[in-house]
Image 1: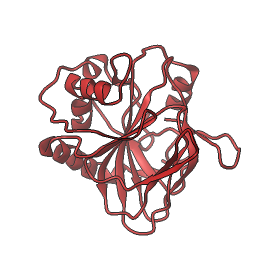
Image 2: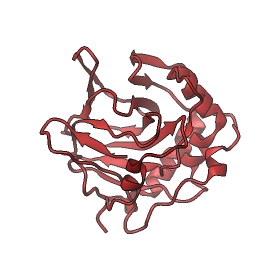
Image 3: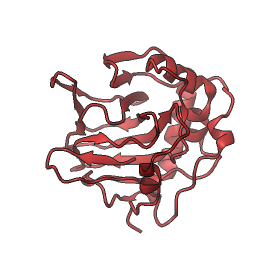
Image 4: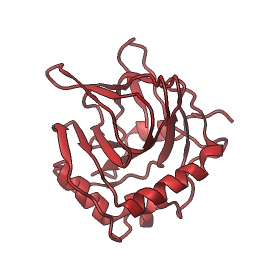
Length: 236
C-alpha cells in the first residue's frame, strides 16, 4: 500500500510485488470465505481510534501455518523499489491456496476486527494483495501516513510473523504525543489510512518479518488503488 512521506516533504509512495510477477486481485470468494474457527483473543487499544495493537491475535495453529508459508517464500523476497522504506525486502503472496489468505479471509477474522476497531460498518479483507515484508539489519521507514485507497479509509494491518529485531514502531497521536511499540510475534497492529503519522525505526540487530494487508468497509476504489497495484515495487 502506498505511503506519503511527511518528514522531508517529498511525496513518495510504495506498494509491493513479488519478483517480476504481476500481482493478482484477491478472489471475491476468498475475501468472503466462511469462518473456519480462527482463534482471536483480546485486543488492547493503544491509542484509539487510529492505532490499535492486538497481541496473541491468532491461534497457535494459524500462526504456525502463516510462519511456514513465510519461510517458504524467503527465496522470493526482493529489495523494494519506488518506496520511502529503506532496505526493506518483500513480495506478494501467491495464489488462492495461501494459508495467510485463508486465515484473513475468514468471516470470524473480519468480525473480530470490526468489533475491536470499533468500525461503523462491517470490515472485510480488501482486494489488494497481501504482502510479505521483511526488515533486515539497516531497514527502516520514515514518518508517513498510509494513502487512502477506498471511499472509506481502510485499516492497514501489520501482522508480525517473527521479530528478533530491536526495531520499534512509533506514531504520533492527534495531540502530537509520540508512542513506541515493539511488535511481538503473532501480534497485529492496525493503522487507519490518512490517520496518524507513524514510522519504523532502523533495525540494528535481528530481523522483523510481517504481513501487510488492508481491511475496508467499502468496495468503491479510489485512483490510488490502481496506482499502487500497477507500480513496479520490487527488483527482478
